Amino acid sequence: MRPHRDFLTIHDFNKPELDALFALAARMKAGKYKKKPLAGKALAMIFTKSSTRTRVSFEVGAWQLGAHSLFLSPRDVQLGRGEPIADTARVLSRMCDGIMIRTFDHADVEEFARAADIPVINGLTDVQHPCQIMADLLTVNESLGTYEGKRIAWIGDGNNMANSWLDAAARLGFELRIACPEGFDPDPLLLKRAQKHTTVILTRDPREAAEGAHVVNTDVWASMGHEEEQKMREIAFAGYIVDDRLMARTAKGSIFLHCLPAHRGQEVAASVIDGRHSRVWDEAENRLHVQKALMAALMGGEPLVASPQRSGSKPKAKSAPVRKRSPRSR
Ligand code: CP
Ligand code: NVA
Image 1 (cartoon, rainbow, N blue to C red):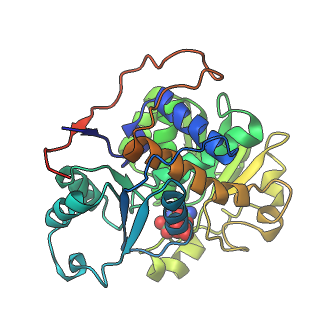
Image 2: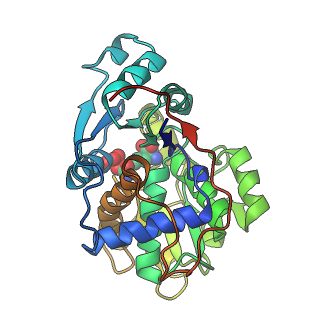
């Protein structure tokens, strides 16, 4: 019986483990990690939504760590013709060593994880985008030294990104200020949970969120699956553009992040995303390093312990439960 863990939300890991992932990703980015912990392994990648960064980072990352990856589109696999999720998960578990899924309904990813006996990684659902927030936080650490004590502003839709920021704030303890129009708030339960752990402000005023912020983050007004609401959302989100006037309110040395793809002139002014505050290309590149760290840990047995440089101690917090892999011959 081999233990395995999933990564469906940032809440699946505790703070020392998340810090260990950042440290491992940074080592990989610096070229100091030479191992191939996924040699001879296979990653199944299921995409029912479009993707550039997620697909490329997982596919290239898996290859760099020694694995083969399979791009599975519902147009081509039997899942798209109604084969049950649980059956697909069981079959993939017999042939592969990890599954990455991007889809609409978060419950589908949870069902996949329950049925699979190999690690399942959430590559975005309607309510979560944890891999992106990990890359964002790696970018914050690189640009500002640490996320500790920082004020992070989220301007725009209370979408999957905003929800994953809430989970990250709850786990890591930085301050989060979210500015959304009424009717576009993030998940109320995730908001409440985060507010128990750290300072989280929900406001209708983007200026209040941006005031003194070290990081300003935004996203499209209409996420995948909401395309038909584009016009209505353009009206609802007018005034939520991240422009130079908004950035002028932020802390000295502040950075701008966007998970991409971006719509210049809507959620962000071209002068900001292409300007001096922007770290969006580092952020996009960091998807690769974070995905590699995650796969090395979940699929390759790389231990998630704090690096001696950062804390000099082993993590004290209790780990999330480890699920047992059912016995099978491989
Ligand atoms: N940021 C992100 O997830 O990009 P893709 O949709 O291109 O994967
Ligand atoms: N919120 C966006 C993120 C895209 C990477 C979406 O779900 O479409």
